[in-house]
Image (cartoon, rainbow, N blue to C red; front, top):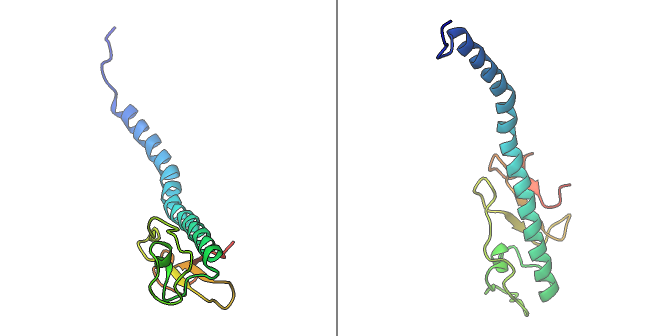
Amino acid sequence: MRNRKGFTLLELLVVLVILSLLAALVVPNIIGRSEEAKIKTTKVQLKEIKRALEMYRLDNGNYPTTEQGLKALVEKPKIPPEPKKWKQYMESLPKDPWGNDYIYIYPSEKHPFELKSKGPDGELGTDDDISVWDK
């Protein structure tokens, strides 16, 4: 009897077909998760900024104005009204996972302030915007 020292072409083809089928099932799930992960990261960052804004309000009696912006959480504003008991509320301001600055507006019509990301398309006012007030 002869010893076999390799694979036949048929065996290699069967392995390739099996790997292709597995890839066809797994790859779409992994690709779809990337965007989902970015959205979840955005929501976590928005909550973190919201907590810092709440601390700012508790210390100073009001939220930073739109003109002062979120930068007021990192360095003391020089634009009136200057906060009475300011301290650094965040080390730095994050950008959303798509590389855009977060949008902050105070006062806001519906909520104490508006805090949102432009979302995946990078355009404000579209259906994919992500607000801190979204559930």
